Image (cartoon, rainbow, N blue to C red; front, side):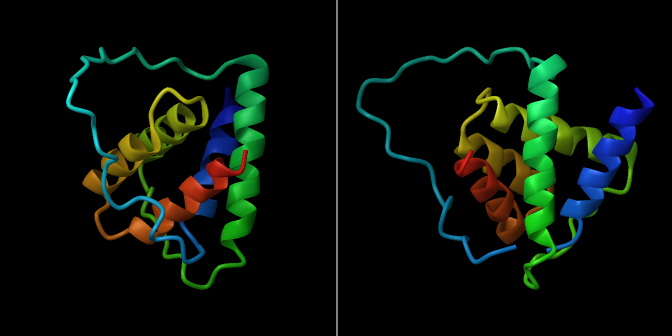
Length: 128
């Protein structure tokens, strides 16, 4: 448990630091067809076992890329609640529990001045 908390803190601190110019990745939702479908929200499925380790490896790779981007601005994840929110959001994206658009919507609702940084993170998941 302590190891997981340390890993989450290191990853969160890494994201508090750098990115690339990919602001154009997500700007608005895709068009919907005339036919409307109702999608029920799925309950959040927490990481476990091998999936958790794979997610953490992906997050480490993304965090490592932050250091090389002078345009990346630190995302303030300075409380346990904010760190847990970030971990949950990124895990749900990684595990395809949410779409890229949902990821950006939720992220920008909480941190509207960090579009560049969330696009950087999103791009890191796009290539996995």
